[in-house]
Amino acid sequence: MRQYRRVNDLEVNVSGSNKQVGVSSFDAGVVFAFAAIRMYLQSRPDWDEAEFNKHVNFFKNARQDGADKTAYELALNALASDHPNVTEAIKQGASTASS
Image 1 (tube, rainbow, N blue to C red):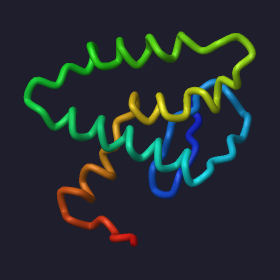
Image 2 (image 1 turned 30 degrees about the vertical axis):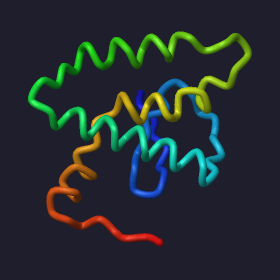
Image 3 (image 1 turned 135 degrees about the horizontal axis):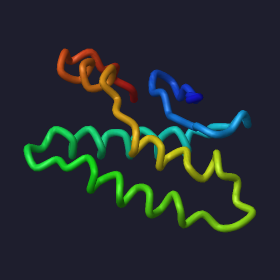
Image 4 (image 1 turned 90 degrees about the vertical axis):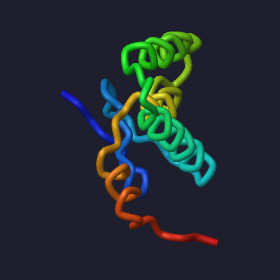
């Protein structure tokens, strides 16, 4: 069963844990930055999902013993997840400006 953690309007997959993860402004910024990187790379004609996921999974498996899996994988899951709702909003120019 999949679980998702909502960070503003971005859903980040946190499969495998019922644990709540506190998300600071920095954490949310990192997650959004990684989501933006993935969406940009995914828009490229040479996008290779399998190759990309191979790299993400390498780092997911590099977690140190005793580290909080859910917190550790938060940004990595943003990289591994597809964000069609955000991609569509960008195409329609529906992003909100912030100062």
